[in-house]
Length: 177
Image 1 (cartoon, rainbow, N blue to C red):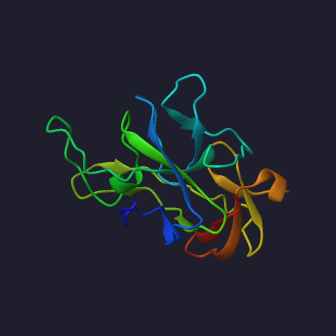
Image 2: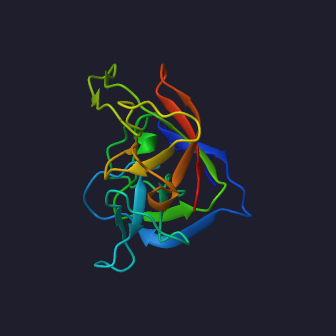
């Protein structure tokens, strides 16, 4: 598995005996998909995945975290602005993997907007909502665009917090399914 998914998501522990990877899927041809976001099978478009709805859960990698392991499959016709920010974006209409599996440990980090030296504006990325700062052992639920602490329980969550840093806006969590 590739070790660099950008500035906003990565693996702390990816034990092959517990991780479930469902591949042979593609991201849709349009839209913005962040690596590490919650996705699921798209029943309307066989062979594709779709952003998970709020509080979506599932078993056996029917719902899980978005990963693209073949990110260097670039076309000569694409604009070449590869930097640490673009590493966290999934390429559209390219092979993708849904990762699940209780015990798989991941990290998330929010990043602020920036203007690069060449003038490109990089949007802020929010992977975890810190309005209610996550504490260790809190459950995180997906709200459709980011993970958040709510009245989440095991029944409606796929992640449990193991560490949180409110200053640097980072969270480590373990997949529960």
